[in-house]
Length: 140
Picture (cartoon, rainbow, N blue to C red):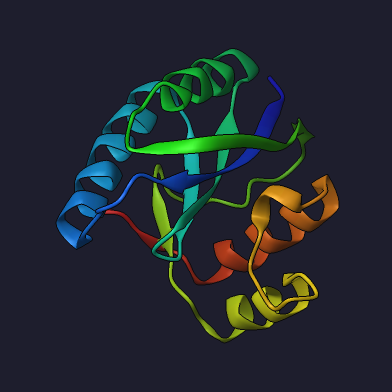
């Protein structure tokens, strides 16, 4: 069975504190464990950028469920397709702002210096999430 990767970004509906983020991660890890998915989430306090990986139907159903979640808006599909290897090694991992992620952020900022993931093309989204995946830690 092929694995598929879907990458999306969204903007949070404030406020979202660390306890709220941890609740999202715990719920996502449980859901992904049940459905054979892996995932990596980047959160900068304003945006989510997430890679979901697994079977096509499970990935799509999970994305549809996430799209209905009222804790975020402006959900943008950045990339979807079959992959040979997964970025995420855990059912759910959180990518913190490490050196590699900071470099990617610098390279992907718009001319005004803002991080605008909804303008990423598929290749940019893949590159960003691959860098995020290298430093991601398993969710609680």
